[in-house]
Image (cartoon, rainbow, N blue to C red):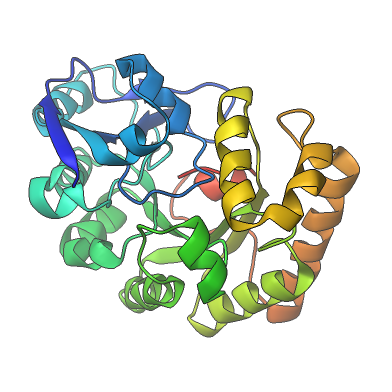
Length: 297
């Protein structure tokens, strides 16, 4: 059972530095999608909560988000820079079906003509096709669907609270058919699982078959706060991989030679499938989060 805790936020937009976008927005803290690799799990410690069941079972809801956002976007100094939704937790996680905060935020971006990039795992996004088209027309929009794998067994074990990958791809197709720049972010690719050549090829091919306008990727990163939790998951679900992960992830990032090998593999398979790296965006909108090479949610 998920517990929703409604809170008041003082600000909606978060200033971001060193990234391909200037601002981020997250309507929710915590995520019921329960992806075991999620880099945002340790953020629940801010609330003195755990990164395991607390992160997936206690969701903070910024109930006044739309009003605060409207105030920020209406300021004379707002330069209509790109805002990325979904950089920490999924803006279309199940809570959105009840609270509709993401939809309300997108309405404000359309109203104030501010461009948006969005990352999600949830087909629920098609509910908001009308406002997505409006912000795309008025300011610019790109949508990345997080699909690290199309393998049903890997998906069930690593992302137990999410919609099946091919449902996400079907939702992406609906957005593409509606004229929205939508594609796939294969991240995080998991060594020994979704990062294997055959798995990457299947995901790239399925993305192309569903009309992806772009495909991005990123390899798993493990912060010190997340490493013990993730290794515990591996011990339970993939014990044969645990020693290899310990060697590969002595630090947050896998060795550069391994990262380069996976990146070259992905690039080769994308070129063979005929899909580009990044979205084709109107105006001067910068690429969305799939260009970070990080396991963003």
